[in-house]
Amino acid sequence: MTQVHFIGAGQMAEAIVRASLSAGTLRAEAVSLEDIDAARVGLLHQRYQLGERNSTQALSNASLVVLGIRPQDDLAAVAKRVRPLLAPGATVVSLIAGVTLETLEALFGTDTPIARVIPNTLTDTGFGYSGVVLNAHARSEQVDPFLTGFGKVLYLPESQIDIFTGFGIAGPNYIYYFIESFTDAGVLAGLSRAQASEVVLENLLGSVAMLRHSQKHPRQLLDINNSPAGVGMHGLYELNNSDFAAGLQRSVLAAVKRTRELGAGE
Image 1: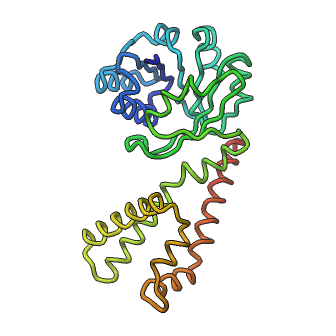
Image 2 (image 1 turned 180 degrees about the horizontal axis):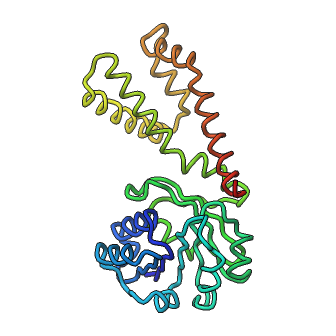
Image 3 (image 1 turned 90 degrees about the vertical axis):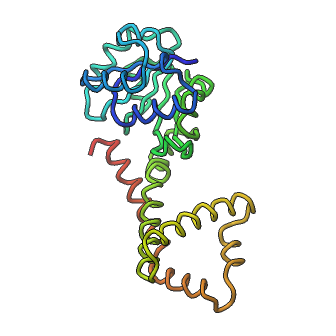
C-alpha cells in the first residue's frame, strides 16, 4: 500500500486517516504525520498506532505527501524544507483552500506531480465527492487508491473547483438545514421530535433510493406523488410561495462567491 505523510495534523487530516484505516485503503504503519503541535502528533500516533515517527525519514519514504496546513500558514517555508526531501515521483497532495496549481508548482517544482484536492466532509460515511485537479505530471492512478478511502472522487478543471466547493463541499450544510427545518415542521404540526426526526430521515433516505432506483427526474416523481388538489400539492404550493428554490440557489452562489474571495486572499 501507499506510504502517506501528512504535513499538518488537524481535524481534516485525522478524519482522512480514520476513514482510510477503517476502509482498509491505508495501513497504520504506512501513515506518518507532522505538525507544529508535537502533542497533537503524539496523540494521533497513539490513537491510530501509526508508523514512522521521524518526520524527515517518513517524508523521504512517502509516495504521497499531503499538505494539510492552513491557508494562512507559511507554505513557502514548508515547500523550501520539503522539496529537497521528496522521493522521486512522489506526488504532492494539497488540501489547502485557495492555493492554485500555479502557486504549488512555483513552490514545489513544475516537474513535481501535484494534486489539488478539496476533500469532502462526509469522510466517515464513504459518501460525498472530493474535488480533484491534477497538474500535467500527476495521474489519477497515483492518487485514486488514497482518495477513495474517504469518499468518491470528481476530477475537474481548475476553473470549476470554486464552483464545486461552494456547491458540493458546502452541500451537507444545506441538507442539514433542510432536515432541521423539516423536523421542526413536524413538531410544529404535533409530532414528538423523536417521531418527526425519524420520519424525516426515513423520507430522505427513501427519496434518494427512489431516485436512484427509478432513474426518474425529481419532477416526474413529484407528479406521481401528488394527486389533483391533494394534500401534497397544497403543501408544495405553499413551499413555492416561500421562495425556497431561489433561496437555495442564492445560497449556493453566495458560497461560490466566498470561495473565490478566499482564494484571492480577501
